[in-house]
Length: 417
Image (cartoon, rainbow, N blue to C red; front, side):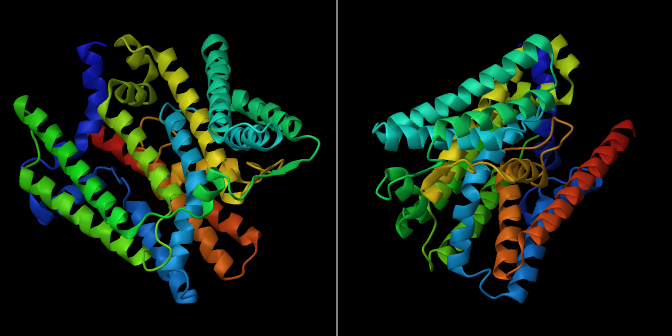
């Protein structure tokens, strides 16, 4: 990859650090945040504000909403669709879409159930087969896209129908396969929670990881005579992060605690975030999403990037299907159907990933799916029907896309100025 390509790919990723140049402490971070908003870089601010509004409204209507037990349940509910949304983030970053992720998740659950129950295979073989099926689907999509130039919308819409047919075929004649309660996957999806001491150690590890990552990045920029954040600013941010997540963890631990399924989802988010933000592959993804032709001219293998994101999306959809199968202790013809596709896509967009490509992060899936799950959970607590949930979720999605379009226009105007 050429030096020009690296410069192109890194420009957007470095913007946030540049805004924190020579600033330290809370005052500096607030000033940097205000400048980002003025420049059209809203980041996660709308999502955070939205979550606060959702929490206030539903808590005022039903005091159970913010109870430790309900939050624990909410986190577990969000994990399966969250993993699927994580894959959607990858394809959206290059300006493409995958409409078949729900069907892929349902097929992976069906394959696992058949391997485990009908064929009597070990759990690990069923998991490997299900994930491999997802990866193969992604390879097929990327081949059709790269070889024939068929729009991803059409490819994955056709894939949705074909894969759903395969799911029905795999589950015939029963239509539903119940996964034994003693299965490790079901235990993982329903009963395995993080011990309290371990949960706080995870919080400390997350804060320490943030500090080390930011410190190394700052030192690298300093070595290259670029603007960089001070150690004091990084340490303060790490401390605030630890206080925040440890406080949330302590509160949730008053109930059942945090499930290992959600921790696994969070782990996947961190892995994908690292790949996107700290590797040449991630810089290539952002470059292709920002301007495909410019990326190609700077030496990036654009076809390989498309292949990687399609495979990543389908693979993560398969993992999400396994999470859902463990949560429900079954695989059925309805698995992955209904609103799974739209919920995963909505979660990625609501979390801050742009439909226009080139903007977003792995944390978009985490934040977005929590917003959607919180809305669904709150409406259920109020005994409202699904029609209301769909309308509210649709309205939130429209607001998120509108904010994205407005901020994109603001950034364009700022760039011209």
